[in-house]
Amino acid sequence: MKFPKLLQDKLETRKLSNALRSIQPQTKLIDFASNDYLGFSKNEAIFKNVHHYLMTKRLTHNGATGSRLLSGNHEVYFEAESYIANFHQSEAALIYNSGYDANVGFFSAVPQRNDIILYDEFSHASIRDGIQMSLSKAYKFKHNDLVDLEKLLQRFSTTNTEIYIVTESVFSMDGDSPEMEKLVAICQQYDALLVVDEAHALGVFGNEHKSKGEGLVQQYQLQDKVFARIITFGKALGCHGAAILGNHSLKEYLINFSRSLIYTTALSPHAVATILLAYKELAKSEKRIQKLVENSIFFNSIVSPKHCMTQFQSSIKSIVIPGNEKVKQIATYLQDKGFDVKPILSPTVPIGQERLRFCLHTYNSKKEIQQVVSLLLLKL
Image (cartoon, rainbow, N blue to C red):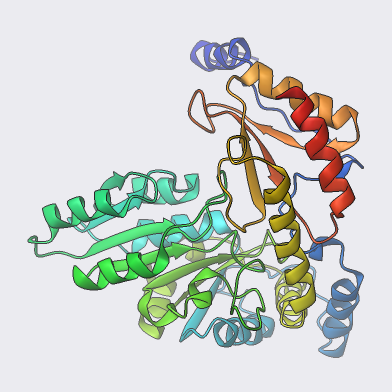
């Protein structure tokens, strides 16, 4: 069967730069790679509670049977969206099949022709893909640089159009965060609409007095000043799917114009029930979240800032090791020693910013963290 030469050439280029991706089987190594921050993906209580919930409601369907606008809008959706909205102190929540679907569905539908989108240069690929599908005009600002953002706002503030400012509360590659309170103040000053992706903050950050993992926006009590939040469930919640949080008008608009919601089969009752029961487990996980914070502080205490890109209390720690070949070699060395640590290669990150990305979990012991860091430092 013929394969196009241009496509083959692109594959060969990836091979030559030692950047060819492949799908590997799961390992039984000590986990420093997954986004399962709270261990919910393996939580037996959630698994059993989901089964009991479905049996109680006599929901034995394997699939949703269609789009939510046709036959797929089963009763679990209503309960889950209501619970999520209350948990996040939002007027409304709308569940999507994935975080990618949510971002593409939001940015391709909400900003209109001639609107302005100002987005952090390190925004996730799903955000940038959604922006590319939009009819609006988009400009990036330097990573977490509010001075650069304000320069752009001054440039466009005289235009008679909506301005959307887009960021993440925890960035997936560096584990760092914007200055949320200052960012919100700037948005208010320029009458801009703030959109925050909270994928890596859910289950990690929350109310500082009694955190339930509500996210960084709620940690600073800014939920009433953010136009939209994207919450994904494939990280700390240990399942699949996402939700967009906002007011009732935003939810109604997305139901009518967001193509990634309208033209796809809905999640099954089992998938949505898993989201709901994972949230209920999260609501009583204060001790788990505190353990995660302690692991983050411990990691920061034994890794010099000259090696670790950020000293934030997120669960993501990045050690920059320039060059695809070198970072892959060190990752293989750690894997051979029993630790699942993944290399992040260019072009996923810029050339020269290749790194090992450590993801911390509640089930990582301080001994394991100390061991893997000690092995790493021997190679740096």
